[in-house]
Length: 146
Image (cartoon, rainbow, N blue to C red; front, side, top):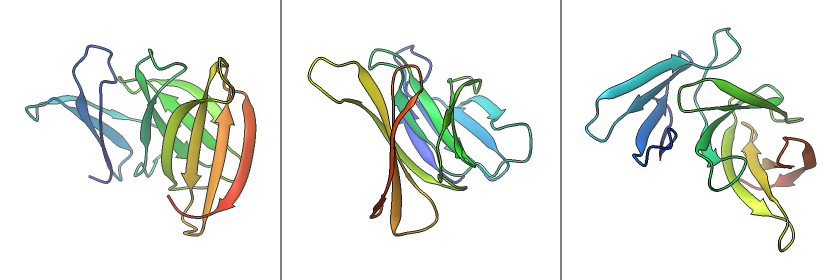
């Protein structure tokens, strides 16, 4: 077990425990620890699936998406492990620590997806902001840590 998150990724009002492993599998457990799902994520090859995050997308009312970085792509999955969307993420790298949230860049503006991605370089964080369609609006590397 590498990384753990808790979220209602199925939209049924019941949070599940999500955890990843080095074999590229995502496991979902209910509150009692019963395994609900175990599925392989990624592009079909052996994926070292250690870090991920969850965030509702494309709006707060939507179920959280599981977000994982593979190369220079951020991949968004639903609660069943199906890949829903792939976002360009220049310079993201492999085995990247992630944090995500929805932001509004102006009062009354539609929500955007903001993702901070920290590659194994401990002194740099990439910030990505995407519009509701997944178009990259902003990318910059900043000194710092997640």
